[in-house]
Image (tube, rainbow over the protein chains, first blue to last red):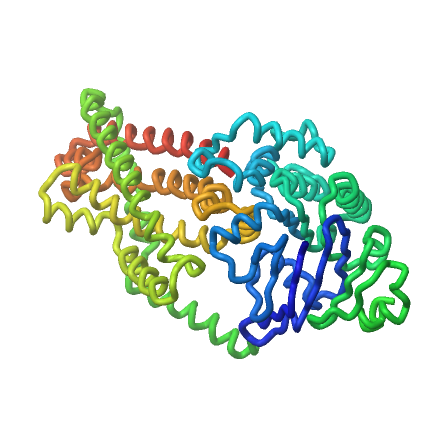
Length: 247
Length: 250
């Protein structure tokens, strides 16, 4: 359902983000994207929902083009793709509920949403996703009063409120402590298993990737250097991805 | 920095200070000699002449009104200019020229603008309002633009990523970050504008300053002290209310 072909990204200044990446991900897969920092994980994920425009190559999701799409086309693809950021990217001063309601924006009447008037159905959906991530009861709290782990759950609830078919997570745990990291990973896995969402998560911790991913894709210097089930990730393969520095 | 250069720098600052103090005829002796006159002056201001209280209150109210209209219109004008003056929302040359123009306008104080507008539209509170508008617009545009530059792009990107329209991104990604800061800057500027508007009457641009100046010129110190007390009370009241409002915005 996700199709990336020969993606390359060269940033102004010459930094190479991606160097000819092709990737196919089927519906319902849980892919762990691993690699050192600077290997291109973020760039790849951002190309998948159009936050970054590749220098060459193309992405499509469910047959709809992301690369080269019109503004309108890009919006409708993004509506079905949730994105979870490393730094959560919540509106700190807004309530937890308002942050989750942001996820429904592509579906609501644009003019009503500008006034902040969401329908009962959308508010109910926001409550439901907050229950789903285990934050029922915190709806009225200001986002920045929550712990890091809770804030990332709010961000996941925001993505779920889109009712997406794909969830992209860019280092979702690297700002969290180990315990919160595991619970966020378990949440992503449950969402994948129970709700059938396709999940691609970039991770810099190898054991989390091995513990939760069904498929491991290793990036190094903007190229895919490994692609297979966790069992196939041998010592040699890991060294090829991380260059031996981490093991 | 080498020790020698550091010493040279310290010496230069000390020299500039001494030279300036000498040029401005700073004299502790003259200050001490002046003390009895100050005491005499303050004595003559007491007790305040409360017969001018009505006048003073009317003047204070007009000063408040000048500050309200001046700050309000200034803030509205500052808004579009601020986006032109922010590095991250404006093309390079627009940014550069807008910032330079703002710096030039800001170099001149409200009172000088008041002189200009009194000459242009005549005496009264209206030139005072215009003076406050011009200065406030340029100061707020600068402050707003700095808030725009310090904006966190993360939450904005997050709203883009859900498939929101451009207006929705503005409403849910940008406004929640900027609005509290803009309101806080505007309230702060309102507090300062009360003080600025209080002296506009010195040049015929309305408000309580007219009475301060008139009674001091007429050597009617008891009346002048009533007006000054009203001014102090108003400034303190506005500062208190406004700073409590600002504390709630953070």
